[in-house]
Amino acid sequence: SAVISQKPSRDICQRGTSLTIQCQVDSQVTMMFWYRQQPGQSLTLIATANQGSEATYESGFVIDKFPISRPNLTFSTLTVSNMSPEDSSIYLCSVRGGADTQYFGPGTRLTVL
Amino acid sequence: EDQVTQSPEALRLQEGESSSLNCSYTVSGLRGLFWYRQDPGKGPEFLFTLYSAGEEKEKERLKATLTKKESFLHITAPKPEDSATYLCAVQRETSGSRLTFGEGTQLTVNP
Image (cartoon, rainbow over all chains, first blue to last red; front, side, top):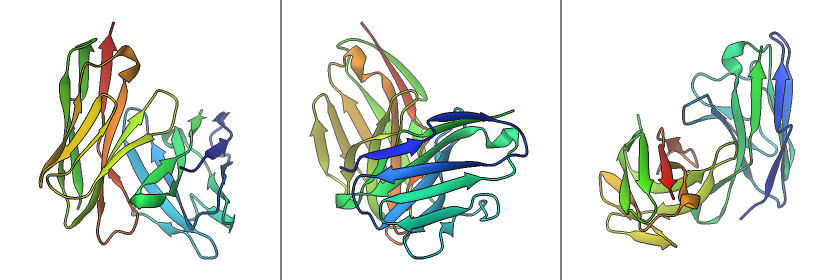
């Protein structure tokens, strides 16, 4: 299994600002995913990030709001732009592992005031 | 659209009291059904992947089974450390690696 770390682990931000979340994996992976888990709810896929290509966003998520970078095979960032209280969530990075599974990072808990 | 429904939403058990969690799904062309465990403040931890009806997988006190419409996670003689939220997710054959998650079952095992 892959070991995934995220920074920051949590943050409290002001409305209208932006936060960049980092995801680091201990091995090279082709596909990385960003999920959101709103309070009391399950996980929703935001986008898929492949190295060397533009991220693919799910319905309801747009690049201007959630720009993603994927500079190499072990690292990705997700930016939450122009934040509002509705963006308060846990943001999770995951990678595709063997046997068609996905492994998740510890998450970034974001609170927007 | 893929749908995953988990029941019950919450379950309280006494230590040693076996039970089952349910995951009902609707998906066009199932590639795999996944079970995860999530502890508070942490990311989901992978437990099992099931691919076809009739398949079963076990890990310690947990056993997952799969039919064409639902999956069960059986917990035998649970311990307090089994307390967590258990998430079910499906992957469609044509959706790449996209997972659709259910809302989860919050399990509490009392000593």
